[in-house]
Length: 469
Ligand SMILES: [Zn+2]
Image (cartoon, rainbow, N blue to C red; front, side):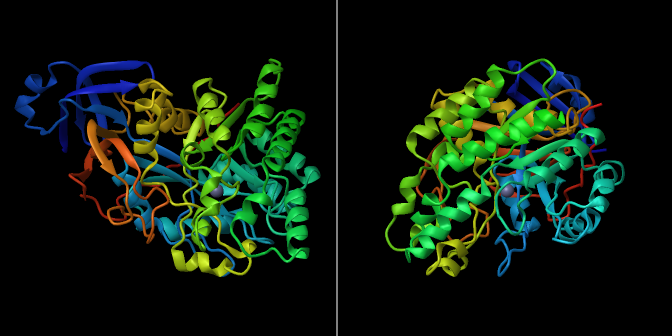
């Protein structure tokens, strides 16, 4: 059996940091403590030296889109390149989205996404399912998703009018059914009507070129309104809610208001933000030529004051998780929207950089503690989304998903060295303090000295169960 010993690292969990060895047998952590090297000498385990390094639980990115088909194109990263990039950056588990096609079933979507991921994914993975079309068939399927497919997390959109958008009446139905099934509702909170209205005005004014119009037509108020509304709708339905990719101070204010006035009978409310909203701001839309298009995503990048508010939200636990919403497009794909900003494919590539940026900007930048870093990058997502304690923990019996992290090594992010299938980096030239050194996935060394030691297909699909009840 595979035996591994990580010696003399500083093991960090949400409750503290201690000097300890970690002993792994097969895919599982067996012992944590001092002096394990001597104790297990006879077992001749493979030794990984972690002196001077932190040992973190493998990162969990609760929001990625690999191999996502869009109208006229497809994301640049598929499950192979995306998952390998994730591993390089210390993320050992991703949760991707199986999207229901209009008129299609949830089961078909899940089957389709299994086909895309199976045999190609190098890290472990699970799926959320996106409900974009609500009918009596879908209602029954909510329960089947959990029982048959191991998917208890259901995403809906309040934006993308005419395609994915769910109106309030149907939203309440979905929320009620998800609550009945013991699931969690994930919501993209932007007011689709407001956005359509603003886009319409820009169109009428002949202002469709220029990426900055994307930000103008997706203002914080459209996010804040939808955020406040979905919190209220979830309350009425009694459904646990997880707001995905929250980006603005205005939207966070609605969360704070709800949290301040929450009653014991209210369903739980969780909030996710993404690493790009913590690090990049809207000045990128003013880059020369068409370069701003590389930063188009929804919600868009915000003002500097929003970045500060989000960091504060993390430290005050108004925000529980940091994801990437990884959805990558190459420069030539962005060209689709050169004449019309509404045709620029939406999304940023970041799955590889989430941990290092969160550590460098957050911990080294003295905005969050080391323990909070572990919580935000791994443990909270595992707990909220049904993977804990198999994932998200350095504990006896947990999967041996471990990151040996050197806090003293600095490096610079560049498209020349990253592993994502994108010909530019949204973080080009960004100086990062701290570097992922070794990554272990279920007891197997996955990344070592910047080299991948596992191949696409190594990753396992993770079934989950009902989250409440
Ligand atoms: Zn997304």
